[in-house]
Amino acid sequence: MKFWLRVQTEVEFYDTNTSGGTVNKYKAVARGGETRTFVPAAPWVNVIEGATVPLPEGVVIAEYSRFMGKETGVTFYMNPADAPLMLTA
Image 1 (cartoon, helix red, strand yellow):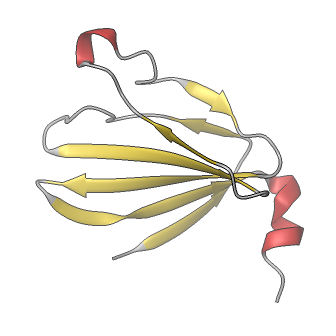
Image 2: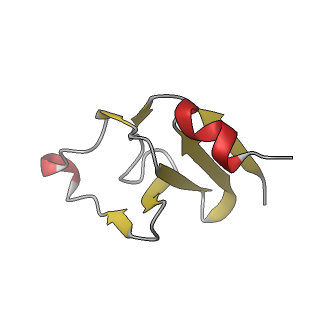
Image 3: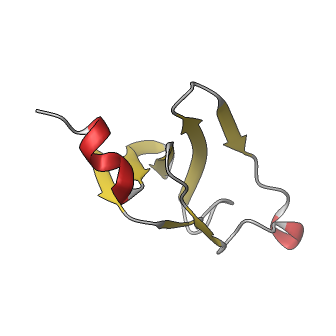
């Protein structure tokens, strides 16, 4: 499985419902350990699809991707202010 890290201030939720074989699932993890899973609704009422949200300090969002039923990787999104704290040598 492949892993990526993106340091940015916003995250766009996309392919939250199966789209041409691709589906993404999202989970937020706060520095204190609290977690939130973003559960998409049916495609015709899915309010998170295509939404761009600010990424607050102290929160990492994990995007788990699958294509045609196979894992394609996990992308972690982190606020730039957290990079010095979480990416120490």
